[in-house]
Image 1 (cartoon, rainbow, N blue to C red):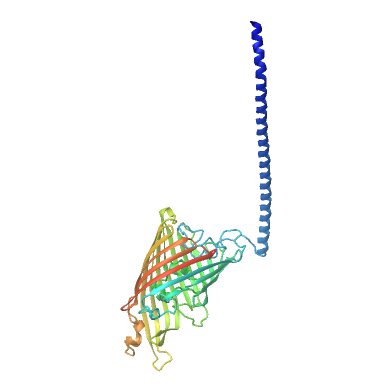
Image 2 (image 1 turned 180 degrees about the vertical axis):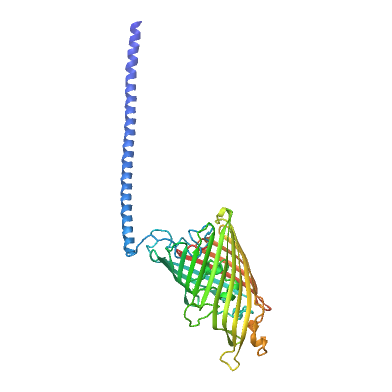
Length: 494
């Protein structure tokens, strides 16, 4: 019996041995395959590391080359790292920031004169604003006038019917050195006329919040005056700007601003200019022909709102400031003093205007002129007499961004010509029929707009207006406008 058990065990072992050998052989093959995969992964990993090291070395080499190029371009400049922006300093400062100054579309990335260390790689930075308008006007625009106000000869009226190229802007701006920055802006009209809108230098390194600008610039009086037309919320300027400043006041001269070292925004400034810009005119005079002073204050109201308010005064004079009336040339010589009060309120949820925001702004103008009115100059009917007037005007507008790319706005304009004292009429030498443009009237206008900005570089706008600038005449106006920004453009002020 024992022999049989031993024999059975031997037979069983003889059968199991080949099976164990086969299993062991299979396991060895699987381990070999795994080892091969590990070797392949290791080789691939090492190859990737080597490639990344080569890319890093190439990047370091490119960076060194770029620095060498920058050093070559800026050779002779004491510092290659620009400080404050030359173009973004129109009313804001890094030190004042209780006011939530957010940038509105369309606007482009920060200016080359901003804080980017390599921003002078292309010096100066160049940007272009392209604009065009399609206008449908009920009344003949050649007959347009602001009744009761002597024509300024500036940007007054709705423009011409049909399609017009509008005003395009070409701006070049850059830091000059650690002490100065500069900007040059050309205005190109649809009539193939080129004019200098701004051309100024500006200090960058003065202490105690002081900043000085010299050249031609948009004056800081009022609120809207210091902004380029492409940043306006409506197609045209308010009637008060057209009547009292000829569209915009752009003096040739000096500007000094002081920013108070406070938690709140407080800015005080003064300007001295040649006096050639309306309401003055070129008087062939040495020294300052016009002086203006202004003060602006602002602060946050909670986390979602902010405001800015200001008061400005402009003193200038005119010598034979001419205008046409019923085919005759009249002119005024004397003093002109203008007061402007402005205020703006902005709201955005938690200070973020990306999706929705609202702003309410308004300005009040009051001008007093006194001097001599010359009638029908260079004709046999020529006559002269005293002239005095106190005139005023205001506008109020609100703009609501109800979707990230859509806004709607409403504006109301009103002017009051007052009751001018004209010596030639009071003395009986002339009748009001001889000076029809100066007859008293209160022009008014209501405008509604809706615009679409698919990006910060483009804007399309529809504007409807009901203009009553002359007695008994209503002009229903329709505007379609596009505004496109090319190149780097400075941030806009609050």
